[in-house]
Structures are given as C-alpha cells and as structure tokens.
Length: 201
Image (tube, rainbow, N blue to C red; front, top):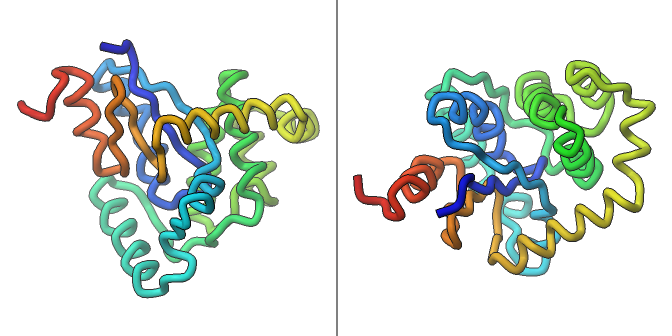
C-alpha cells in the first residue's frame, strides 16, 4: 500500500471548500498523510463535456444548499451562493502549486477558500489574493509573478495530464493504490481503503 493518499483538487471546485477546511485536522487526528495535488478540473470537464452546475440552475441550487448543510455539520461557515465560477481559476491553482512547493500552500489554500465562502471574495483576485497570501506569510509582489511563470505553467499542465491518465473527472478526488474516491463525502471511504484495502470495517 502507498504511504499517503493523493488529494486531487482544484481551487474553484465548490465542494472542495469542505475538504480543504478540515483536511489538516483529519491528518493530525488520523496520522494519515495526504499529498495535496492541484490540477485543472476545468480542462478535464470541458474535454468530457461534463459541466456540473453552471448551466443547470436547479442542480446549482441544490449544490449550494448541500454545501451549507454539510458545512454546518463540520462546524464551518458557508455564506452561499458564493461567487461562481471563478474568473481567475488558473491563477488560483498555480498559486496553490507554488505554495505547496514552498510549504505555505496549505495555509494559503484554506485562507483563500475561507474568504471565498465566508466573505464572498473570489480566490486569486483582490482583496482575497493579497490578504490570503499575507496570512500565509507571503509577499504578493514576489509570489504572483512566480505563479504566472512558464515553469509553474508546465507543472500545472503535467499535473492535469496525470489526472487525465488516472481517470479523474471531478474535485475533490482521493486516490489510493489505483482506486478513486470522488467527493468530500468519500473521504472516509478513502481512509478505509488506505488502511484496509477495502471498505469493510
């Protein structure tokens, strides 16, 4: 079995708010390590003709209420509807990639999502961008050009290519030894598979 669960996500996925807001506590409580893997779910969804909410108002209404209910269950705030879809989707994920490389990514990602779902501020745009980077101890003047660089773009593209090969179609997805578990509500299943190689207790 692997030594960690791959946590594939895109900043811009609404349900991913529920995961990034609690995953570090889950890691601490369980002792299980998660590899945070940003990728472009938007690219894969377009390739797969898989647009889940933007053109489906009834489904979108359900999604906002579902997130609100589940956030309350986890003790999280959620002011919905939040701005969606994101205007700076790719920059948000490039920043996540850079931050994870430099070891400030998890705090930045959680802060950016919190401002999105609590304060209604879009990730990778002001005022969310500067405030979340500063909360993570980073200077936006240094970080944003690095996130926009060709190198990070290549890393982002390679991660998305890997996600495509694995068969991903949504965010968040947990990958354990070739098994995929899609959705925040499948986190416990991923943990069970990681520990036992099955969903049996």
